[in-house]
Image (cartoon, rainbow, N blue to C red; front, side, top):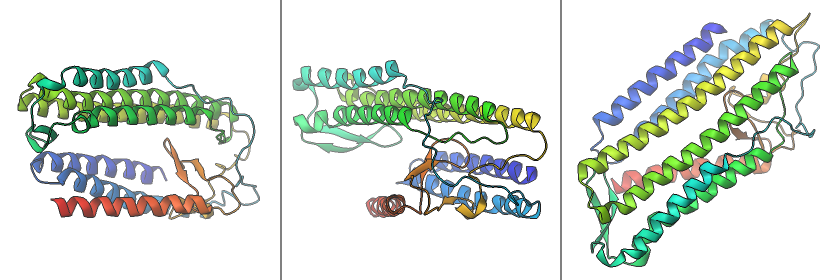
Length: 322
C-alpha cells in the first residue's frame, strides 16, 4: 500500500513536470495550455485508479471492515473545526477591482481606440474592439464578480458542517481538519488577490503603455504565483494529515477503527462517491482538500453531468477557435 501511494505521488510529479515543459515548449500554439492541462488531469486520474487497485485489494485481503460498522451518512452534529474566511484578503481583492474600474473611467478619453481586449502568451494583443464603456470596463467588472464569488465561496466553506473522520483517534483528526480548514481559507484569499491583480494589470496595460515583454513577464509571474500558492496549500494540508495519521496510529489500542466513511464499496473506481443513502449533495474529498459531488444524489449526478458537458464544450470551442 505504501508503495502504491509513493508510486502515485511519483507519477503525478513526473506528469506535472512533463505538462509544464509541454506548456512552455508549445506556448505560442493556440489552446496548447488547455490541452496540456486536460491531458494532465486525465493522466493523473488514470494513475489514481491504477494505484488505488492494490490498496483496495489489500484492504479486502486483510478484512479491514469485517465485523465493523462504517458510517455512510452525513454528520449533522455541530462543527467546531472550520476556520473563518481571511476577510482582509477578500477586501483587498475587491478593492483592486474597484480601483481598476475607477481609473479606467477617469482616463477613458485617453485610452486607445480600438481597445485591446486579449493578449497571447507572448504579451501581444490579438483581439481588439471599439472603445466603449463595456469593452473598457468588462475586465475589471469580471474581476470584481470573480472576487465577490470567491468571497462567497470562502464564507460558504466556513459554514459547512463537515464530518470529522476519526481514523482511530478523534482528537488528531479534529486538529488536522482545523489546520486544513485554515490553509484552505488562506489559499482561497491568496488566489482571489492574485487573480484579481492579474486581471486589473491587463485592464490597465493599454493606459500605462506597458511593453509586450512586461505583459508576458507579468502573465507568467502570475501563473507561477498561483502554482506556488496551490503547492503550498497542498503541502500544508499533507503535513497536517500526516501528523494526524501518525498521532492516530500511536493512539490506537487493540483493533483500529475503520477509516469511516472510506468503505471502498461507496467509491466507484476508488474515485467517485456513490451513496444513495447519504443525503449530502457534496462530501469531503476522500483525500486531499475540497469537496466532490455524491453521484448517488440526483443533484450530485447533475453536477457531474454539467461539469462533463462544460469541459467538452469548452474543449470543442477552443479547438474550433484555434
